Image (cartoon, rainbow, N blue to C red; front, side, top):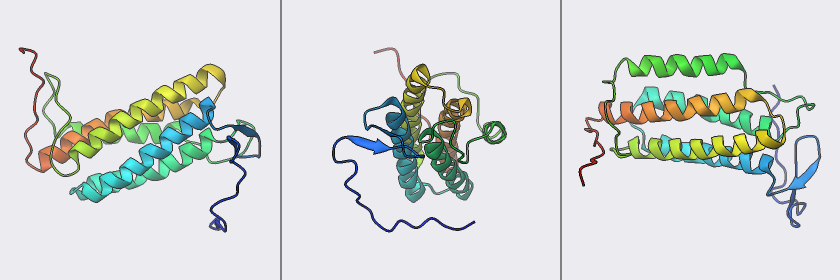
Length: 185
């Protein structure tokens, strides 16, 4: 597959608050669609930070795959349904669920809420989880107005679960003991 080349970074076409979707349709930069793929883009950037902090090679490999998925999801969200672009499929959601199940085998079941903390990449994975949840809310808002690929919402929902589990794995493998929420104060 030929690589796309970006020859110019600035185009000046967004200077009045509009941007182009895939296919050329112009929309406000504050539209639900742009908000949704903007949060997905932010999540992908946060995962870039996570990669610089995570110590575990398995977690790094999974994050790299997720980052690629998020790029596809961004293109999916930036494309009206009639435009042909790669789109996230149910099979990828199934793969995410299998990864979650495999990682959970290594963890003790949670009986209480934990504070988002840790060493190395753990706290950053918790941060990525919260950005994922925000992206999910923006996708739900978009779905109230338009009909994007429903697999996008399901994927992002599963992804926040996976990020939570990966934070716990990163902390466990790094010998960090989780801190439970205290309700006795």
